[in-house]
Image (tube, rainbow over all chains, first blue to last red; front, side, top):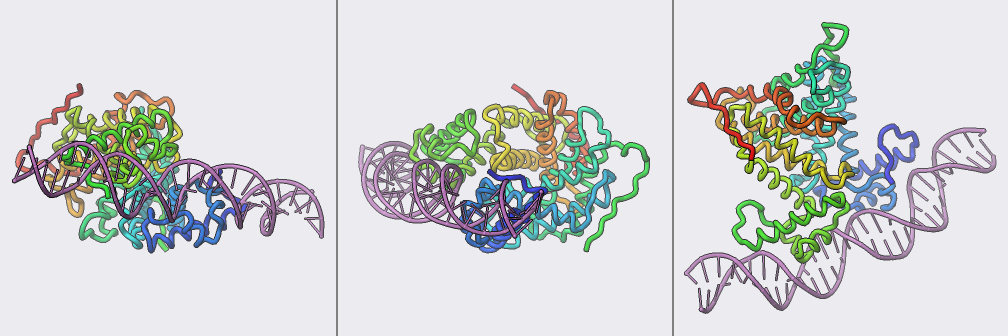
Amino acid sequence: MPISDCEVRDPRIRRTRQALQVALRDLMQQKSFEEISVQDITDLADVNRATFYDHYNDKFALLDAMVAGGFHRLLAERNVMFDGTCPSAASAIILAACDYLVSTHAGAECNRNSAFEPLMEAGIVAAIQRTLFRGLETRPVPAPLTPAIVATTTAWAIYGAVKQWFYTPDRPPSSEMVQPILQLILGILQTAGPTGPHDHVEPLTVSHE
Amino acid sequence: MPISDCEVRDPRIRRTRQALQVALRDLMQQKSFEEISVQDITDLADVNRATFYDHYNDKFALLDAMVAGGFHRLLAERNVMFDGTCPSAASAIILAACDYLVSTHAGAECNRNSAFEPLMEAGIVAAIQRTLFRGLETRPVPAPLTPAIVATTTAWAIYGAVKQWFYTPDRPPSSEMVQPILQLILGILQTAGPTGPHDHVEPLTVSHE
DNA sequence: TCAGATAAACTACTTTCGTCGTTTAGACAT
DNA sequence: ATGTCTAAACGACGAAAGTAGTTTATCTGA
């Protein structure tokens, strides 16, 4: 039975799981997701096929972990942290989502079929949601809303906007879309009241490297 | 090879596909989605297993068609039409999403794993998006936004809110959540300007039966 | 009504999936 | 260093997934 992916201490587990994720990523440069078998992945990762199932329920679970982890890492690399006061950190999240979507669709196309896209999308949205929630969980929101609802709504809204931008023919560069998308979703975030003690909050630091 | 699902003339095709969808729906009252095999579905639908693949690529595609069609039908039954002016029709969409989510999760639980949930969610969101887009496509929006982007963003935001409500412990009844959720997403819709010729637009008619 | 078209049934086959039980070997604490 | 714990390897198995080709039955249009 598979074990949770976060906070794995044993280096053997990390090595194997990373090998599987790298193998899947590389294979997706050539084939579409549904053409890839578990055997293909384990062959390339050089682990036994049965071992695969010690870590993931199926290839969908592997994809899920890969996307969620990859996007979360992208946010971490860019030092994106959201503390509840919106503007700059939210922009960084939007831009990261644009970049990630572009990067993952660089390889083989025809992934618009099957369960691939919805699954990848769910992973991205979940990562955005967690980031937003960390900044919102202590803030008051009018009942019956909750910080979780505000965070989830914003996360889904952001991804929806980015996705539609991505599939727009002759889309403008992502840098020009960040502000308009931010304006779209700002109304949701403003539902949350000011953060507890202080009335003024310093804008969040965001650095691109 | 599967054929598109909309506008099927041959009654044989309609009968078979409906039988498959009904079978899957009934089976999901007892087992979780991933426990259901194609054989189970075709046995209950009383069609040959090979015939299944004449209509759908796999059971995920069947689920997709079932959810999208089912939710679309729910909207149609309630006479939900969105013509671009927000309030009442948007409320009806939100309420329908709540109801549909509750109804589909009435049977076997443990569907939070695997690809089931993301796939179902994608179907619902797509149906919401199409409904919104029909009402928005002729309205002006500030560049570089497009009616499609506004519609998609709203659709995803609505579903995100409803989903998080659904998973909230001791959640209030859906009727009490419609207004707060509407307030959350209203800001997005208001990005779209007034509909073409007339400055005042009559509220959309919505009837529940 | 009849003829052509085509969906469905059916059989048979290969591939992939998912699991089980055993063995091997690497990680970690003492 | 040494012993214990446990992940990984491995082989084998049955079940399910897909696919291919042929036959049968039904719809559709003239």
